[in-house]
Length: 342
Image (cartoon, rainbow, N blue to C red; front, side, top):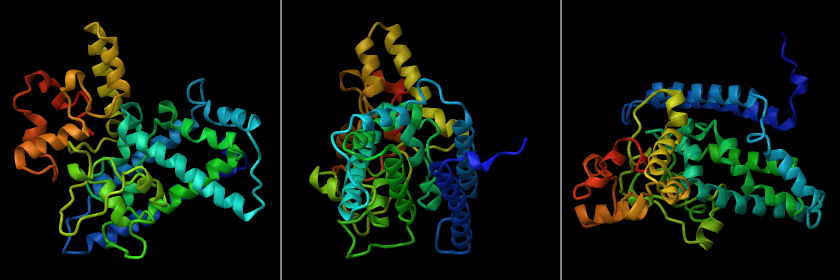
């Protein structure tokens, strides 16, 4: 049966065009990088993993939305019906308001994606690439609707922006972020600290502990500066990209679901042990959380690095992650289960 493209809405068409364009442009970048002898060889296996992840996303989007996955647009529509006022989009200030409103809520969505494990389970996929290139830009989750990140944008509808306008604005925000996923472009002096740049976003994708949990802005860094999460890239400091505990699999399905599996293991163990509050901590605490302070959150990683090296900087060594000396209670956590894989 032939597919009727007329059934697609503008958002679906936009996402389809964005996806196809991203694959082509990213492949061109891969060819160009492969021709250079002064760089690490381009990881084509990781590129094809990213392509397969996006094919999985297409399949997931094709599944009829159930009660859990299909609430995003209806919830936004409900908020819009009960909006405080209507923002006129035929005025210049309406578009300016939309830009800053989208950026504000995107900041908090992105920050939650790193600081709340439930959201991290979906967002972590974006950080699994061990090289920083354009392919990282469209390595996105297939479980975003399950984790419910849409709740961060629904209030925009309450403030007078239609659901379609919100989705379109969010899409434009993501399009901007495509070009900043590269280490081929150095610092851009007149943009640094104001706009999200390749330099600022390299910091965001770094596994170096001094760079964790910062630079959440989509197009601008205004809210990072306001809320204390802006960190500039330091000259001469090597960056290791990817998760704190490097992911080595090229399986698209494992890449998309690994942290959900870890959550289920931790929650199941907590419930079997009669600790329902611990189960909530494993779900909604920060990545790396464990009971009684026995985890490897960002702050704990920095403390351990300072203990080992005298400075809370650099990428954690494998021996710290696999053999956390002095804390035998968490050995089971360091080999896949809890949140150290962040």
